[in-house]
Image (tube, rainbow, N blue to C red; front, side):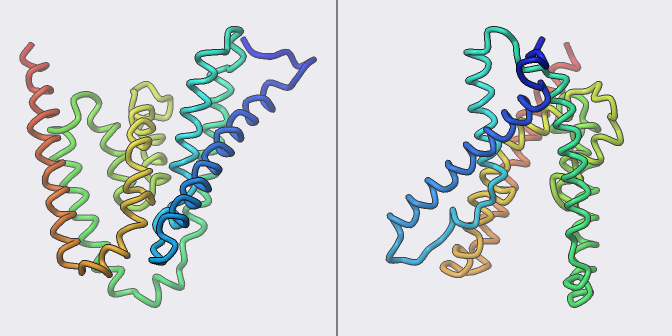
Length: 238
């Protein structure tokens, strides 16, 4: 159930709700930028200013969803319409991400790109084949392929691969990926850690930053294998 076309077009209403989520995310970002400028004006340090809008738009989406869940007594939000908007937006995101690749930059740094590409592909394939089955309790392939694609490029790549292996979304892979992004994007995927990387490297050096990130990576690997992987083994035994 949704609104009647006599009063308002349902598609327009749902697009408006999506726009509202983006609008809320925009003002959250602007507020944090203002706080950063007030607190660190003399130091000249800018971190929040380099964080993209996307993670804050996701937070705005959570706020809109919580509000509508609590106060939408007439079920005016239709899941199928939201899914249509989502699929259209994902298609546009994938095309835009691929179309904005700079071939000139790749050509100017070809050998560096080849080295990074080969090492990255080999590492990601090993992680996908070895870690994903041991860390993800259910539907490891469909869920792991999304993280694999994101590690190979951007989130749009992971989404594209998930749509290929699970076009009808019969598994919870897409939902799991979306929930993961809520925590991932504000921190690493163009979030605070990504924005703070260069200032931290400049202040503390590349080697200490590499050591710190390596330790964090190993810690999360161990958490995934020893905790989530252990739960998966227990479920199999039961």
